[in-house]
Image 1 (cartoon, one colour):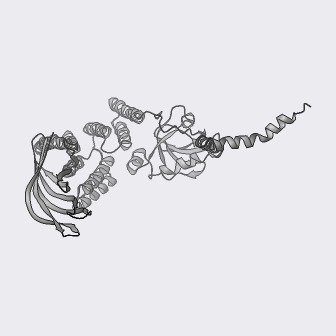
Image 2 (cartoon, rainbow, N blue to C red; image 1 turned 180 degrees about the vertical axis):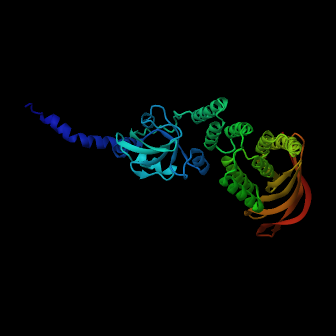
Image 3 (cartoon, rainbow, N blue to C red; image 1 turned 60 degrees about the vertical axis):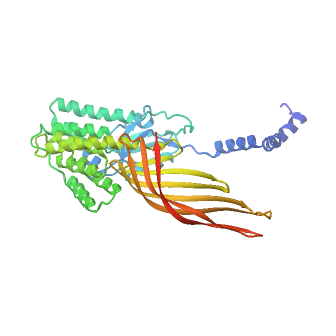
Length: 451
């Protein structure tokens, strides 16, 4: 056996100490190295199957023929992933993982992450109304760096949706109308509410149902959501509450996308919420479904009016942002907020007027209030002694405004009564006072923004 020299042995015994000294002496670099070693040793490996999932909503459960809304809906498996290799595909509903029930979509990811990579697992899923099992080998979750772009395309879900729509179109072309309706309804249940994909599918369903006899019935769940919408509408007192009403009508139409009065009512609610673009879409769906309705002409006239309101709304949105002179304008719906600062130099200091206009846009006028905050910076030195009065005093008032917008929304004028103040100032042979502002008058003031 070859013997180790004393020098080499001594060096090896001192090696841990030398490494420790290098880490300590290298400061930040040493801390980074220590953290890197600690991370590699401590970070456990996490499992990965490569599934994009959605919740199973009541309308999706009905479209899939499920008895109740439970499980995790497979939107799509990633290409080459363990899930794809195990045979899972879009439309499957996973209901169990290693014997543990998956009641909702959020139950599955933590179980997969906690599974050590390389483990063989069993998944139970429902496909076409039948419960099946699949065996998969769990992969390793690779966390991408924060600055690296995602490898999955944002358009990938839309590709699978287009495939679903294509299947429905193929069935309709072949004359299998009931099957096409089922496929369209299923595709509708997987789309985001109030999206362009939803609109396209609803148009296709309306055209399809016009050729069906007998017409499909209105499900009880659709009626339930419609009555909930009416109840919410009676209590609605704000735009946010009207949006909740619209969502209830939207759910009703997920269960019965051929329900023409649902589109009409949804259009009315969205008009009240001043969501004019969406309102136009749903009134057009009503006309598509019932072109010969007695209300058709009035609805078409309503659409023309909404188009004007939408154009005005878009022009108002363009007013948001910074304006010349430093003013800032914020727009939310028909609400406007304007922030300005005006500095006035004085011989003994300066005054800063801050204005915050909060108003409601009605046509080409603005109604609301302006909050006026005056910061007065006074510096007065005593005539005979080396002392001074240096003060910062604030005064705040709220005034009613009258605002006007020009037709192309490039000029904003806000008029109000501006408060005028004077100092409480007194000087004697040994001291001075300057400790408050006094309101002496109000004069008309106009803020004019132009760009």
